[in-house]
Length: 343
Image (cartoon, rainbow, N blue to C red; front, side, top):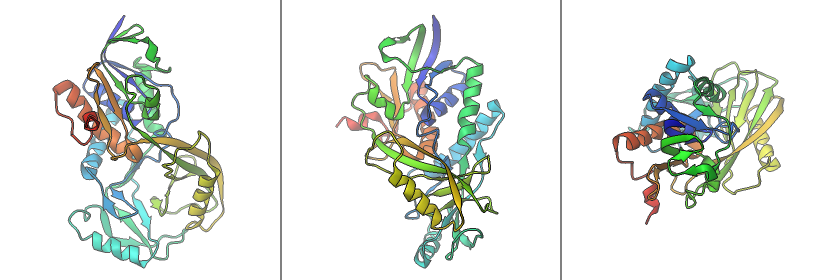
């Protein structure tokens, strides 16, 4: 029989960032992963302190970005790789009114740290009103992040590449493993979890394209108009992703594919080839806050879910909050506590 401090169940940012907390704090664990590509693995990995449709910020944006930067440096200390790509976001303005609104908001105390007041005009793309740079923005090498941490865990027998079987858990034992705590980080997979049947996560489907551009960009930015465009490692580009709150079947939506192609054509006036279409289902919550907490009848059974479209930032920041709650008795923020639904 094997004894561990934790079992983690999941494939995405919640599971991997919580595993990082355990690695840094020298806790024993095994992570059960189906090794599938869910919403986290096909995400853009954008690190963005703003809502770029409205030029506003969001809850804990500065704190989350600061903590992510620190965390990525910690991950580098044991994987040997830094997965933070410091390429700023440039928002392409639709018209002069958007540009003026950016200027006005860049003078406010709340947004001055994030909105660069100097504008640029970029070549290769259509941007008659210029672009605005988002300070403190970046992106994460998503494939590298999951691949690097997976390899580290696999080398140390912390990773089990198989589907977790709920029928084989009895109290604090799973198969031949005794555990102190178990953390379910399953995203939309929580709908099959018999212990958290009341969790109300909403699937938000997102598509993105992998494209080959006929004219390469001469700048190293992440471009944003309706969606994000940035270079990948193999001379191709990522363009996406869409937001579809109306749950649809588990297949590529041709309407969303066309929406993306039209969106790219709106500012990239050259030929491009669509190499792949990918999608994932983001686990979102009605109040747009993650879900952390444990069961009353199984107090060592925890959930970490509902990261939404900001999976990297939410997953990183709240992994520490959950760890401190379990290990040191720190109260969970009421905004993310599972108990907020018990009304």
